[in-house]
Structure formats: structure tokens, C-alpha cells
Amino acid sequence: MTIYWERCSICGRYHAVKQCTLNPDIMVCPHCCLACPLRSKCPKPVWYPEIREKHRVPQAKKAGERGEAQKVLMDLLSKLKEG
Image (cartoon, rainbow, N blue to C red; front, side, top):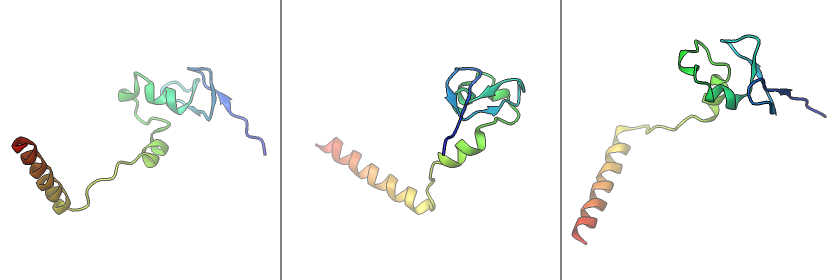
């Protein structure tokens, strides 16, 4: 099976590309979409949903876990001050 990727209008590399929402005549790869200086003004970035799901940062599930981690950290800091 052969997959043909299109050429990005910004960087010129061959990647999976999608049509830009701000400039419909431009096809952008995920790298150029993330590096775009107009990304903060973009109403719906093309590559946002896929990238967001793949690189989600896990958060602490319970407040107790965070408190326990803080307690261990403070204990280690006090040992550093002593020694």
C-alpha cells in the first residue's frame, strides 16, 4: 500500500496536510500550524483536536495525592537544609 502525502504550502515538506481555516488557499502540516504566529487569533486551528488528544497531560486525580507529594518534597528540602 502506498500513501502519498501532499506538500505543505509553508515549509515545503511532504506531510499530511489540511486546509488552513484563516487562509483557505493554504495547505498546512501540523508543524507549521503550531508555529503559526496567527494561531492565537485563529478561531479553529486545523490541527488542534488531533494534537490535543495525543499529547494530553495527565493531572492529579485526587487532592490527597498532591498533598502527599508536597509533604514528601518539603521533607526532602528539610533534609537538604540539615546536611
